[in-house]
Amino acid sequence: MSTVGKPYHWWQTGVVYQIYPRSFQDSNGDGIGDLAGIILRMDYLKDTLGVDAIWLSPFYPSPMVDFGYDIADYCDVDPMFGDLATFDRLVAEAHRRGLKVIVDYVPNHTSDQHAWFVESRASRQSPKREWYIWRDPKPDGSPPNNWGGFFGGPAWTLDPATGQYYLHQFVPEQPELNWRNPEVVRAMLDVLRFWMKRGVDGFRMDVVGLLIKDAELRDNPPNPNAPAGLPPNDIFGRQLHTYSEDQDEVHDLIRQIRCTLDEFPDRVGIGELWGDLPRWVKYYGENGDELQLPFNFRLIHLPWKAEALQASVDALEAALPPFGWPNYVLSNHDQARFASRCGGQAQARVAAMLLLSLRGTPTVYYGDELGLENGVIPPHKIQDPQGVNLGAHRTRDVARTPMQWDARPQAGFSSVEPWLPVTSDFEVRNVAAQLQDPSSVLTLYRRLIAVRRGSRALQVGSYRPLEAGAPGVFAFVREADGERVLAALNFNGEPVQVAFPGFGAGQILVSTSGREGEVAPADLTLAPHEGLLMTL
Ligand code: NOJ
Image (cartoon, rainbow, N blue to C red; front, side):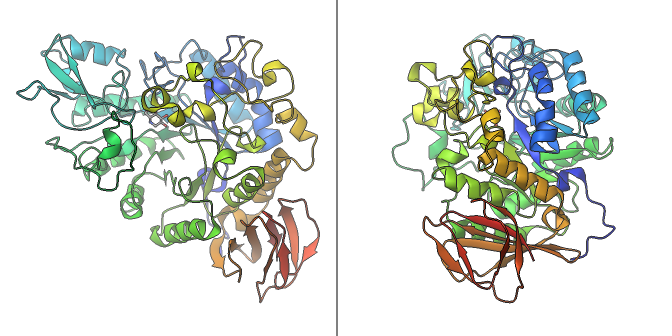
């Protein structure tokens, strides 16, 4: 595949790194991470790890009922995290190093403390009444329809003072904006402009598939495949979300969002989107006029098996429109930690290689580069509303524990007890220790990122799956401008003999097990859970 002279965007060639600001670095000794803390760690991001862009989860003023995804003011910084001047400094420090900055945009709902909602709920005649979704109760006083909320319970709460229900598909403190109202659209597009003027390079957009609901707000049908054993309050889990998400009309809004991004050069829109492949792919737009990167979460919920993963990658490659750029995510602040989910450290190393060698933009979640495992959160310390409402096994706190920098108490994250505990192995599982260890996960990530940066084939080359001739092996070739890189990933706990005929000698670029030198792809033995990247 010739890529010569073809211009690629930073969000195509780069590696994105997600920072959960509460948990990255506390600079002021309150046990909660902050923007100044992120600035302190900028050299780590750029020079040590070598990523190209950082995505910051919300740092806006918020009562923190959903840890910042309940925003009380879209155009400011919560004092807990700093202020606008600190944010400007963060952008300047990032840009000085060539790092792009992506911020979270939460367009579907505000906090119930947002001035818009306070005004909206004040009376039925409020000029902001139609900024949110208010409906009369049914004649028997029950909610307007049967929708359930993601975090349990009904999606409607009655406001006794005005006698109407408002819609919220997350916690009741997250009322949903009415994007059918042009005033809301205008105000929310201005939020994008506000941050782009401050220099941000793009947005990760929260639940954008929810922006428009069925015009008649019809009842959702039951889900015939709902898992058994859901808690009684999990109404959402028992329904199909036919009328509450992914309505065709949403695409008009996404196009408007994209037009707004395009008012500024080279900004990126990344959407949090679920749903099946044919519907998901529509968020690229008919001519590439919607999102550049609808987040691809498909690998997250698959069994950690070579065949399942390859089938997903191949299906994605086949479904993408010619202008659609792929991307991969293995974890984020809503999922259990990857190293815990996929079976252990050996598997996490293979996962790192997969993420960083597939065709498409990889997003790395903070702490995964240390092989961080699920935090152990004592029941009385569970904070996430999902865990509080739907059971301890559903808490997302496990993936939000502090970044572990060194072996000092609190892992160098804070001088006081942090908002969530560090993991018990922090004395060895930390940046400082892993930097000294040539076989550490961090060393592997650094190497993978550096190799990707130096390889046109890995950054932008084509993807071609290979038949390995053995079960449990995912192998593929990436190729650009005469450069060829072969990836061979053994998902088995045993050694496996593979054969890729037709290739000459391969020079190992990275091995998850530290192997170096030359190999013969035509007759190759992979160690248990070994991944190899080689040039041919
Ligand atoms: C998705 C976010 O990633 C999650 O953390 C949040 O709770 C919901 N959207 C609601 O904003």
